[in-house]
Every structure is written in structure tokens, then in C-alpha cells.
Amino acid sequence: MGKSWKSTVSGAVSAAGMFIIFASGAPYNVHFPVWLSALAAFMALGGLASLGINAKDSEVTGGSIVQPGVPVAPVPPVAVERATPVAAIPAAATPIKPKW
Image 1 (cartoon, helix red, strand yellow):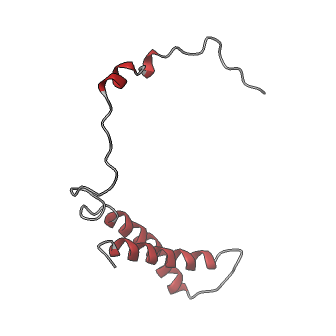
Image 2 (cartoon, rainbow, N blue to C red):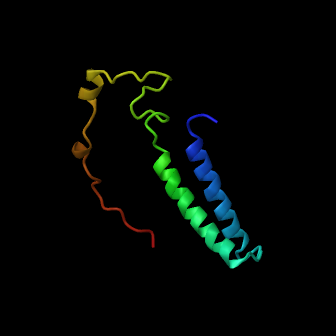
């Protein structure tokens, strides 16, 4: 595993917890011990919280490190001058009537 092992483990823990929660639901009705159902809820919530904390790692997703890829060309100034501002677009002359 590379540097993103924390987000991978967080997603797997959350998925395992959600599997137990959904398997004990109405269509499947698998009966788990009460302690396992409580642990599954903790795994699902804790896994998602951990995923949110670890997903934006500055050394993995490019917080301070330039990522390789296609460089983005800057917008030429002529295109910016020709663009119509949103506020200058007139509203519809007739009001829209509901179909009901």
C-alpha cells in the first residue's frame, strides 16, 4: 500500500459496519448479537469520520505538492473581456406560468 492506506482502511471499516447494519435490516433479517450491532454502528460512523479526516492529506492529494498531469492553460484576457456578466443578462419578459 502507498501513502493512502489510512483512507483505504477507513473506507473498509465503514463498509464492514454498514454491511452488518444492512444485513440485519428488513429484507435480509440476519440476527446478530446486540454487541455486534452496536459495534457495527460505531464502525460505520467512526470509519466515515476517519475517512473525512484522512482523505485530505497534504502529501497524498496535493495540498502543498504539485501533482503530475496535464497543465491547465491560463484564460486569455480577451476571453475575459468578452464574457457577459451574469447580472447583465435580462430576465424573461413574460412570467413563467405553471402547467397545473
